[in-house]
Structures are given as C-alpha cells and as structure tokens.
Image (cartoon, rainbow, N blue to C red; front, side):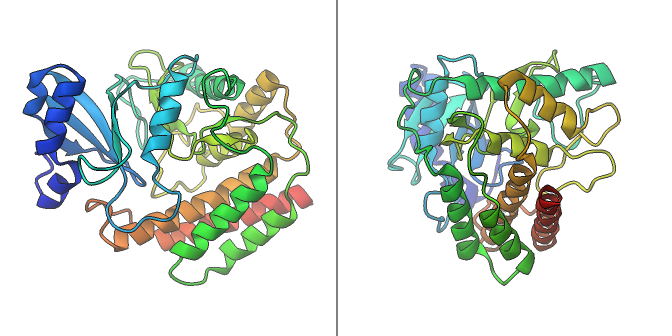
Length: 351
C-alpha cells in the first residue's frame, strides 16, 4: 500500500477489504487495491482506497484503547445514510462493518465526492475575492441551517439522540472525557467547565434538531468550481439530536478572524482579507432560523471547552502511538490557550 509501514497495512487489511469491496461494488478490480492515509484525520482515521475501478474513502477508529462512546463508526454511517434523502449533501455509504470482524475494527466505506477540503490555504484562483469569500461563508451557514431544518423522524433518525437535557449531558460528557484524557491538571479547563455549568441557558429558542457536533469549513467538501456550494458534509462522528446552537457556536469558534491566533489542529484560511467576520455568519444563521443570539457567548465558550478536550484527547492518542504516526505539535499550550479564550468569552456574556 502507499502508506508503506506494516502498522498502516494492519489498520486497513487490504487482503480482506479488497474482496469485500469487490462484492459490495460488483467489480473484481477492487481485489487489487491500495490505501493511503489522508492527512487531517485527527480523531478517526481516514484512508483513500484506490483500484483500477476508482477511489473510495474508508473511515475507522484509531488503534489502541478508546474513550467510552467515542469513534462510533456505526453512528457516522447511520446519519449519512439517513440524510441521503434530505437536502443536506453527504457521501453515499458503500460498505459498513459495525462489528469490526473484517479489518479488526469497525469501519465504513463511502464514495469519494469531488471537492476541495480547505485548511491552511485556498486552491489557486479559488474564492480569490471578497465576494466569493463571503459567498463561501454564506454557503456554509446555509447548509447548517438546512441540517437543522431536517425532520429527524422523517429521515429515520427520530431516536438518534435524547434532546431533553442535552446541554447538561454534553457538559457532563465532555467534562468526563477531560477527566479521562488529561495527563495533568490545567486549572483554566476546570474553571471553564465550572463557569459553563453555572451559566447553562434555561431555555433554547430553537427546537431540537440533528446536530453535526463538529461543523466547520474543513469538515465540508467545497464544490470544485463554485465556492458557494458545499459538495458534502463530512465527519459525523459527534452527530446526535440536540441543541442546534451548539453547532453554530462551534462554527464560530473555528472561524478565526484577521489577527487572531489559529489552531495547530485546524489551520484555516478565514483570517485572510475578504472573509466576513463571525458576526456576519451569526446574523445570517439567526435570520434564516428565527433564533435570537442572546446566549451566543455561552455556546461559543462551550465550543472552546469542547475543543480543548478534543485537543487533549488527540495529544493522548499521539503519545500512545495510536494516530498512525501523525504529529501535531505542542497541544498542551493549545488546550490552555483556548480554555482561556473560552473564559474570556463567557465573562463577556456575564458583563
């Protein structure tokens, strides 16, 4: 395979996967396939599997011990299959093994959708002026609005989560993940968790919806020609039914503005001239959904907390050698910095 190490070969098991793909896709050319680790997968591992028949994408958990409820491949596949009947653009699921018998871990394979994944730089001549950069931002917000408008029961996801008490459970869950993954005490993270607990909104203005759980620019494939069009939304690992404002808070967290520090884990182009600010995205979402933004600072602060915990989990997996050799730099400083930003944000809400 292109990823030459024996470790990576063990993660995909092409000797077993190839025949399964040949059967699922009714094409014997998949017997002779290759796999390459796609850079950027920091939670679940993402591989491109290729043969003379074309290319598909495989998603599987990292190797090693996993935190409870994390890396649920069946959940990712379920929501993508359900949303195929909706206006939300998703990749078709082609093969799924929830038990993990085939390659030694649960996985699914989806179609490879043409598109740009935009991280640290823009493709040449793509969204190269302020008008197109605003259109890109608007397209991203509009797909989030579309997701939150989907009737979960109508697409077969009526029991995909428990919306009642969602925020309280989310805070408990991520606090629990922090306790399990931290290697030493970081007071800023603990203080942020306590401040969030004390400031939980009493009532969400929006009805519960399908939430993505990690909605951001580089978790979407953007159309090759049209910056305003999302070709597919990816990485549904954290999706559930709950408070849609948590998705907006995360999108705004990842949408860094000019002059702001970016993340080692999620480099972004939104600090470039011509991209609109977070207020533009928030107002577009509020106008489309009829929501108010009174509690937005809480949701943004919660996004900072969630990201700090995710970063700590990635750091722990890197240290344990469970990230297929990927390295991401000094994540300890990253965790502290974004926790402190979250504290500043929630302080603004209270002032």
